Length: 266
Image (cartoon, rainbow, N blue to C red; front, side, top):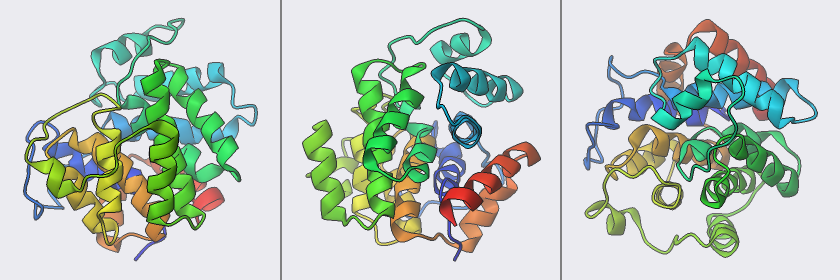
């Protein structure tokens, strides 16, 4: 088993990548497929990690620049249309998105800070450079808060109570309740609480990924959200899943991930 922070999100993205447009409801899906790769979820997670590592002021302008740097380096990664237009423009501002792109990239904020207040502030900034709709910010903050509480000793009941009470998400159902009627959904409201529920239903990191991806939704993004919270809560992940996902990263991403994990997660 390996200790992990944002690799929990990256492994969830890689594992979910082949199921995003070929959804599965099979809990026993294949974990290791040669077609699996990192997607835009990983690229932007690395960008947020790079920003937190190297910008003490946590400037939104700096974050936008860093996101554009990484996004333009990997233009094939699978960005949504509105985000891609933002990415290629040097001066585009936020576009009021409520999509789950804000939650997929936020995990570094959940691991890096010493208080819940700092975590929520950084998560809000990381969302609002593009996803400044209240639902976009809420999705990022709920995910980051769950990670923070998970890594600082919060119980699953603590996480459920805080996320429900603060953000109004329904965490009262199980994955079994959700699975049959669920389908691909890119809104924060339609995917973040389901991803958190997958973590709550899990018994370890692998089972968290299996619960999340087998819901049959936006598999790579939901895998990233669930995987980050699970890595924070369980404190480790199987060597095979970690090593497989890490092997899919180019050297520049490996360098940022290694620096971030060393400083904040190990």
